[in-house]
Amino acid sequence: MNRMGGFPMKEVFQKLYQNYHQDIFQFIFYMVKDRDLAEDLVQEVYVKVLRSYNSFKGESSEKTWLFSVAKHVTFDYFRRQKRKRKRINETIDFHEKGQFIPDNAKLPEEIALENDEIRKMYYCLSQCSYDQQAVLILRFIQSLSIKETANVLNWSISKVKTTQHRAMKTLKQQMIDLEEGMRDEA
Amino acid sequence: MKHKSITDEKLKALLNNMPEIHDKRSIEEIYEKVSYKVKDADRPLKRRKWMIPAYSAAAIFLFAVLFYTAKLIIPMGNESADQDHGFSSANDNSAESSIMSDEEESQEYGMENITPDSKEFSHYQLFGLEIGMPYLEFLNIMGEPSQMKENGNMKALAFENSDTGIELTLDETGEEIIEFTFYPSMLSNHKILSNLPKNKEETINFFGSMENKTSISCEENNVCEQYMYLMPNKERIIVTFTSEGEVNTILLTLN
Image (cartoon, rainbow over all chains, first blue to last red; front, side, top):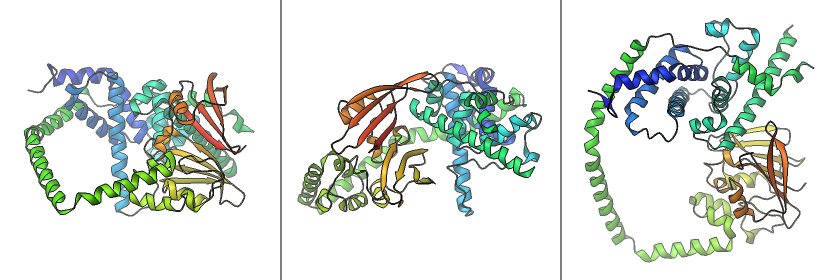
């Protein structure tokens, strides 16, 4: 029987699912921009969390703990991808930018149904570095405070602020480039 | 132009309006997959758990044997002589290089070119960095960045897979550095620059008491403090803090 801290595993799972599932899923989805992948990764988060639930000391809130596991799982995935790409000898700069290439056919329906500005933002977000994306998603899509974001990412507050500032600059530049690109085409 | 309409507030509002994305699977479906994996992962883990003391005992024993045989083969005299040498040179070269001497040997070779004996210093040094130094010498000391972006006479360098940690302004020839901006929060994994101060207390311990303390407005109506230090040859160091009192930037400049 799997029991954690006196609770059966199923009970712990249900509690976590009810409180945080959609938030965690959404965070992962916006990081990886792929529903199937987000489904796999969110499962990995539960496996990690349930296996170490007994050692959770409540130093951070349960919510930031779950988000931080989700961040690790997601960045681990990016790292594995990077290694794979290295093996097949593609020289893509992993660190700086997301690998997402805008393709309307792959646009998730939630985004495809939205207006032009949201679709643009979805694209611009993908052009930020992974660190910047994580900060933007946690701060403004998930509405976490700077302090909570720092806990999730295990960063100092000033690192969160600096990264957020740079992310906003990147977004702005991408928006401008996009608009100019469209004007040139017209 | 249209660009001016893109404000931070607008971008934040847009992000805030991004559609909610839901996992469409049922709780049962997810639980089934998760619990299978948890139970599966549990089994080999349990077997491994009691093995850990056995492994560590074996490792300690092996280490002890190796240590004692090594001691017999290599006379102790050599080792202490080496250490003495290391300490005395560290003292000569002031605090900066004592941090360096802890680093790998390859780094020490790089240092040789820039020890005080071989060059006249005209400027204040921060971990061996000074205004007017060639960019290549900078790389010698700091190591290769994991990433570099260039924009005119500005270079933005990232180390250890973090985001940009140092911005450099170069002179017209593009060879000599005339201004440094450090972001200590992005340099926490750098072998040398992780020693830069990260809060007010560390700043005062590091640079001493400031010449001048000012407050500037920053980050959406907050007030951030700035400490200014005047160095002997008119270099200035300006440390800017966040509203929480963590170091945001350290600027080393002549202006």
